[in-house]
Amino acid sequence: MENKIKSLNEKDYFLILKNLKISVIIPCYNEEVTIVSVVEKFHKILPGVPVYIYDNNSTDQTVDRARKAGAIVRAEALQGKGHVVRRMFSDIDADLYILIDGDATYDVAAAPEMIRMALSDGLDMVNGARVADCNEAYRRGHIFGNKLLTGIVASIFGRRLSDMLSGYRVFSRRFVKSFPALSSGFEIETELTVHALELSMPVGEMPVRYIERPPGSVSKLKTYRDGFRIVRMIFKLVKQERPLFFFSAIGICIIFLSIFLGTPVIIDFFHTGLVKKLPTAVLSTGLMILGFFSVGCGLILDSVALGRREVKRLAYLAVASLSHLSCDIL
Image (cartoon, rainbow, N blue to C red):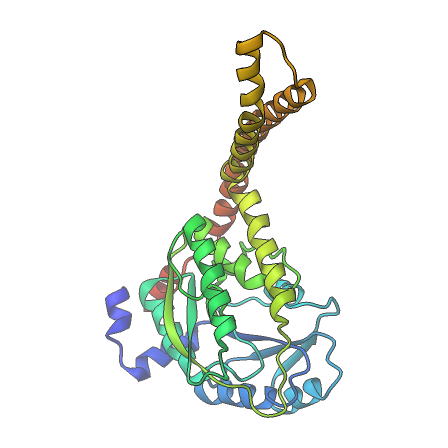
């Protein structure tokens, strides 16, 4: 089936797209300068596909301009990209979802090829890995931060993506309807990535041109604040999804601290038969107990995490795959 899709000509390929329910979903906050361009480009390259704009308390003309451009405009009152994505995933029912920011920094023209990749390979997520066309589009500090955070997640959950924080992705219905969406802000991209890696979903990645913001458009990303929130989300996800690793690492550190403090006390005891540093001995003993207790908590919570993963996997499998939908169409 995959080879059949790959070999289709453009006419037959767009016939398949016409029979699939595809939705473009765009979270927006004060994007009056760029939103019309994004909506019009999607209408041009994917005619007939609805474009949903979810406004997040914009104070400019974003809503009016998006509506005039032909978008379906809805609202989410809770401030933060994570809240908006959760609302979009809850409200909209589709076979394929195209998630993109409304700031016109991603190449909209890549969408058809990302969809083709998802269909031909039966992928639940296609990630648009950003390739900047100038330094102003993708600042070096952000590149370094992205690589650092992506590397941390990859070392724990698996090396399958090179741009964990991309805001341009294509999702299957089974991904969206099994995604819990617990984030509130820009850390939502981290949660999306970990969800796919944790359930061992079929995912892919393709390079997408990353463009400089047009004049008058201002980024909503706060480098240090949002970077801290992303790091916090990574720790939270490690604690929830890898509790044995998380609590064992803490426990081992505490045990080594206990050994470091207790060794001089033990040496003195063997030489003199006395415990000269009683407070240190008590502290060392308490730390040793606490360290083993932390490891024990990790073992127990690991079983709980396994149960949660099984429930999410069952919810994921309850939805028809893209391969199944494509077979029905073909």
